[in-house]
Image 1 (cartoon, rainbow, N blue to C red):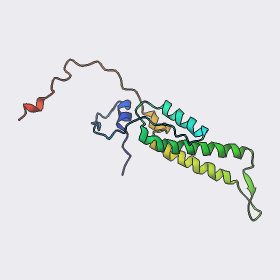
Image 2: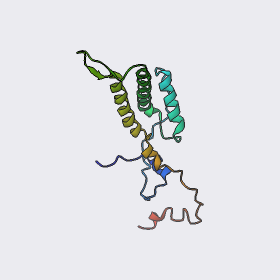
Image 3: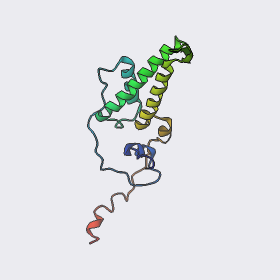
Image 4: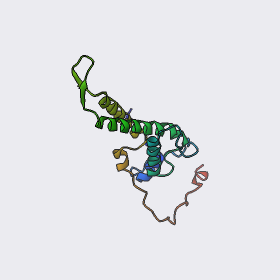
Length: 154
């Protein structure tokens, strides 16, 4: 099992400190993510914020479904938190005893979903800690000198 592989674009942004070869032969989906019209305004704003905040090329059109699921979970979480402000944390249950307000369960389940989806989308703080733009290095005068060397190895 181990840790899941990171996207090569993210690894390039980190600078590839381990100097391990990066997978360049990837299936790269076409297009930029779009904001589906069926999402409510809060979810659309969330998707817009995420896509504008991350480096270009991280997300594609194929990621729209996962991004919209994250944005919807955030919008539901926000709505439940706002509703809870007007209600007590403890309410009367069906048998007359005091129970936790059901909105707390909604908030907690949406928070768990946000954490899970956010990790997959590279949105958690730990994933961003290692992100750095690669340092500009001057082009070496020897760069490209060994191109086609394998022709002479035979």
